[in-house]
Length: 374
Image (tube, rainbow, N blue to C red; front, side, top):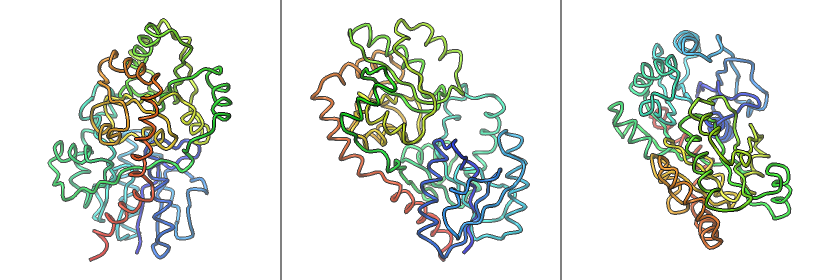
């Protein structure tokens, strides 16, 4: 059997949300099915570590797909032409971008439809592409894989897709995420927060991650509580918008906010495992991997009561209204209570058992089998 896979987001030293999901799931699928030929489609020369086994053949197509017009050239012409030549049994797109011109059976992995609900958060040219093509991808797909029951329902309602066509595969977290001892926590705090306890946020600094309200909430928390707690922000400032900048500039306690930038998986693990709590208060998520990462590290979680986050967190986190800064600040204050922290850690230990990349990869493969085993 031959399976072509869109792996363009497997980027050396630049793996982010969707790229990590593709990395973890495809690594397992490839090694579990040595009899299958996998053709990984990249838009630049791949790092050798992404060629997971001898049954993977890397293919580089042009142009590099990093702009809506280039997406069209890449998927509708280069990928379509390659699929026509290869004649695979299946084309799997790990970021939902299909080839509308191809007659090959296709599976799209949809992570979320945030652009349908908060279009104001996107540059106009990208929004145009998402709105024009993603409904067509959903209809074109022979099957869809998505990451939560929330996202499944959202795809069905937005695009009129039958739920029978969609499979849910919960994400996992890197095996590196685990608790660390007090000595390591002290070393990590000395490195990242001047030795002080800290709340942490991790993610792309995109508007939907709700940083503006997080900054305001942290300011409220600091005004009510005389302490030395810091807020560590992990992620690149790629989407540092005017509202985020204004909220930060207006803070009275901005000196207690530390920007750690992008971290390696190893360093992110240490920062997560040493945090007072992970504060993940996006107003829209298809899943929310940082929630699971924190559970794996015995780190309490504060997260939002909207979209997929209550589904992922269940009863193992403090749920807040992401549109109300006071709600976020109140949860930060509750985390200072040792009994609250202990209860959340214990519940997180139970909840984390429901999420693993092994389970996710198995769900992906079952979806593949529905199209390849007659």
